[in-house]
Length: 241
Image (cartoon, rainbow, N blue to C red; front, top):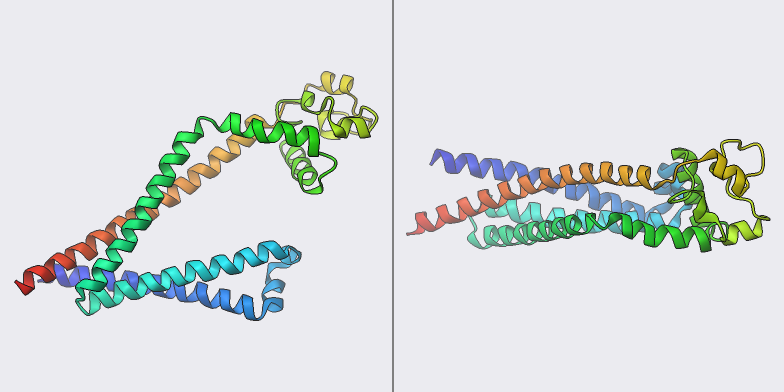
């Protein structure tokens, strides 16, 4: 009986934290949707990005509502010894867990194609959109400047591109070590600035490891929550019989 009490108290306490987190996120989303100007002031330099602001509001509302629902189901199911609520709680957590595992399997399966996927996106973007599309230009300028690289493979990604045609054969300054002079194809060849692929792939793998660690921690919590809810559910079956 003592073990059941410990599991019940632990589950109630855990779900109370989930409930509070969901309430906080839901309140934040409601506040942002009702009084957007005050919320935007907190975002500082990001306040001009209306699309991102809308995404943040929707994300806060969705995650907050989901956590609120799970917290209520877990607390009420454990506190009131409700088999129906415990089973519902277990089912929702199980669906989320299976979805996460499936997403992880897909991510692992496609990780070996990371270079081909990046190349299929990056090379056409450099040849056709760089210099013309402000978003693509800003992204690549920031990447090349921060990582001190040129193009995806190297400077040859810009040969024959719209940017080179519109700039009299010139290439982006990061492709040449001597940035004070105009960057020609000959100067870029002498500079031998490496492409961004290796550094970009390294950054992606670093962030993937962080995301994977967080996902693994969440998975452990989900398994614990499912185990606790099913343990209480089975205990209720035994107590009834």
